[in-house]
Length: 180
Length: 283
Image (cartoon, rainbow over all chains, first blue to last red; front, side, top):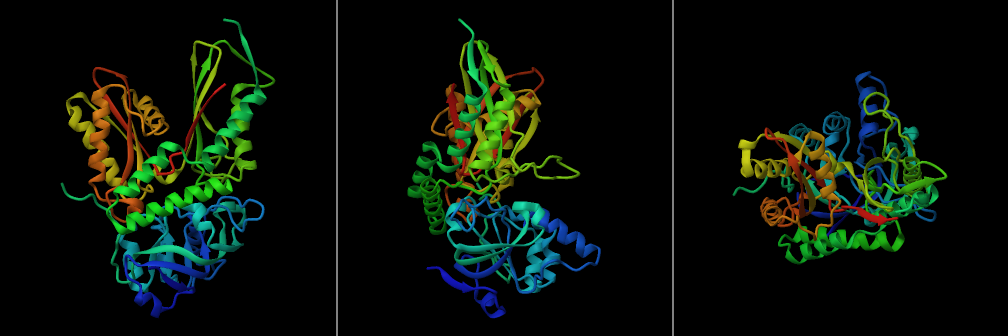
């Protein structure tokens, strides 16, 4: 039975989420993937302000396909999260509360999640058409020149995900092969 | 045999259709394997993931939208009959135009950047496609086309094994590569393996192996048995659908082989996600 969660995430809600919980997310989230993360990171290193506030936000690692006429968005499943591992701790330290992606995270990210009381959700890789049905509206917030890699704001309703790593660092991802 | 003329526009049209269709409609081989996986999966989360993937494929086909937002980089293996002449353009440009048209008119994601290191600026039409052409006798053109997403492409590897590594060395490298990929390449995966040839030949064989339907076997029964053995071993690893645990980590293992040098035994492993999109046509 999936738990319905309203975004933005509050610390109280984050405390209740345990690795393995199925959730349906509703509300507003940000998107960003490789190129946008690189730009955000370069701004941080230069001590410059970011084009979007990350405070209390959830970021979805996605580069959607173009929308057909009459669709709010094209297929929009998660991309591999490990490619954002180099950037994620700094963003978590700025108040990011959740990430949605697919696959494993490194130890630095997990430590930054525990330090900042944040959660990592897994969306199902390759379920892009299905997931797009839960995305109601999208708008570009920054880096429009990056096209699919721009930072968008998505309004979602019952977006399906699974708590992959909770705020205590517990994970349900299988990252090593079983013995034997 | 007489020379046969084929209009460049016909090539473009067929290539465009291949790319739109492969992105909207998953192949019967993958669909069958996903259905079988759903029946055999023991993990409740794994079952749920497989149900969502089947539902996703149904929605994509019904709405004619891509199965996955990563509509990949286009790779085509072409057998070009030596009696064919292209009229009204060049073969290469006709193929590139077909890919361009599919990605623009078919609402597929444009995922190709012009320069790999410095600028990384999107070409905005998903070209260039990668085209491997072999000249064969005859008056036909056969195209085996795929679109390769990079979540799984990034998990691929090649190793120049030497003869003393033997069969055990081959198995170990393949299994180590899959184990290292773990939950990242969108399991349940398709594992394409190329063994033999040279460095680049092994990699091309591995790519070709991912484009072979997974309900087919290597013609040599020894390699066919190895495909089965590796599939069983991979599914014992426990990564499961989406890497959330389960007994279905791979849908299939396809091996392609080629003669090699007395000093070598190259092995390439090309990993593909469950959305293993490929389609063939003959013109």
